[in-house]
Length: 494
Ligand code: HEM
Image (cartoon, rainbow, N blue to C red):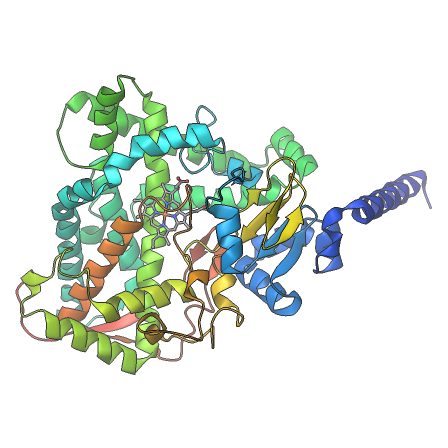
């Protein structure tokens, strides 16, 4: 063997011994899980890269129980009490801050933003700045904007029905939620629905989110990270170029709006007003970073919720019929369907909850750090610095929380339910870092569902297609087409 191979073999041997020693000393070793996960981040990274991460975590819980050692310094949980311990407020306990994984979710190196800010005080400042845009009053003022976009979507779907063309509902939901959010967040209309095409800027956003998913993995391997920064392979250079274009484009939108003095009840308008209240001037790049978060966090998530609710309904004719009966029984005219009148449709709400439970749009385990000095999760004392999470996908798919966890039963959300632990499904998160757009998302979803199923009968083109099973997870879900036929129920004016 040459000297080179002796050196390589020696280096590998030293690495294995070092890993073994640190493994023996790791206090998390007492928790169950695969040995490879306990000594290396490789399994975590591998499942992130192949796109089955949420399913992998769920399978580990099925095998090892409610707490699993998923990476050397990281544990995953699935109980509702772990959700409260990790993400909620506990009197006398310190906050579990977001983990270093969130450093990957950076819009720019110049500033942090509401999603990736890890410091609780700074985050509270950002949340306060954004809160007025998501207040009940603000949302009420924004409904005409949302309703207009929803009606454009309905008219476009109607063209497919009249021409007897099939339609990719997943694509159209994505165009719809992008048009809604860019209208609200930035006061800009990109007309994606009318064009039937994904706007290049939406592609920037989606590519940006995927790049963040890859960066989350790379950050786990500091040597690899430094190597990539030093070598800058072509894909990375292209990605950085795209991120910079995205940044410049968003900052320019903010600049234009600052100068225009338009008074419009949208999210950017509320942020600009906030400057006057606080008597501070936020930089354009700071505002752009917050708005970019809102667009990334609010577009694909809402579209995924619409996709899954409709996919599962098309697989369950009985549930579909109950939903149609509820909506068509409640509304005499299409014009009567509004954000206010759709708030209290019990079956519709149950369908949405169940879709979110079965296919959580945020399916990545949102990790937090146990504070210095250590703290308990689910009754286990954990050393400070341990990364912990409750899987928004894994928890609702565990038979320890839900009966027949992989089956679509909206009824579980309707009446006293002794078999399911409904608190274990928290698709919008819990605590100070929970979703700021929850009310906006739910109202938008209810409005679209009610309008769609009032006016049209939709059916899957291929009734056996496993749409959920074919979705790949890369921070967001990469979803296959959801091909449907649409038939107009009756002549109703839009
Ligand atoms: C069905 C749709 C949605 C789901 C399931 C969802 C889910 C979530 C979850 C689970 C979190 C916490 C993530 C974490 O801890 O890492 C979150 C945070 C967030 N969401 Fe949503 N979201 C949805 C729609 C929206 C919409 C429509 C908006 C904005 C218009 C939005 C804006 C945000 C923001 C800004 C955060 C960060 C909050 C913070 O850290 O303070 N989301 N969302």
